[in-house]
Image 1 (tube, rainbow, N blue to C red):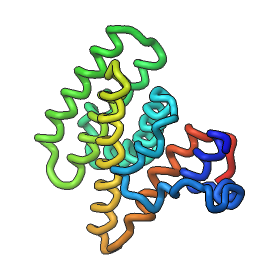
Image 2: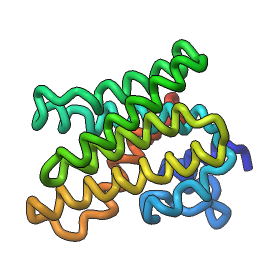
Image 3: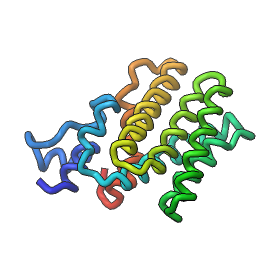
Image 4: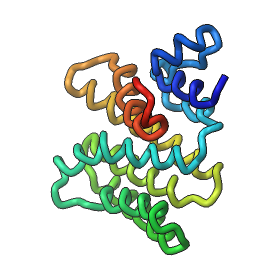
Length: 185
């Protein structure tokens, strides 16, 4: 089975799942985010980090900016993570880690559910800045778990109990746009 076909099936692309039939890997939408990385081991670490950056920018940053008009540390952490790829080097890595630390301070100051968004921004910056695959994967695990917690908690707060699968699908849809940009959903 080709790696792209397997990745498409993991991300829930119906055509890939049908084509692979019984050999299809598990659909990540049905698994807790804590299990995703064990199925994404073959994906390049940089691609996974870029996917996490895109997911944070499209799913969580608008929520943060809407409720925290003057607090920009999560935005700065995201921008620092992006700089690790645009202008790689020691300065970019140090800056991303400094912005990750700044987000840790935001988590202490944030009241209510939004502290998870700052925690997710911190983990994204750490994932971009960590030099080893092992440290990157640990940070990515925190990104995905925190993102899932935030979406499930937000859904529960608005009376939408048991929406785990929909929350996972929202995260995975954003990842799909980067991991398999030309594939249909």
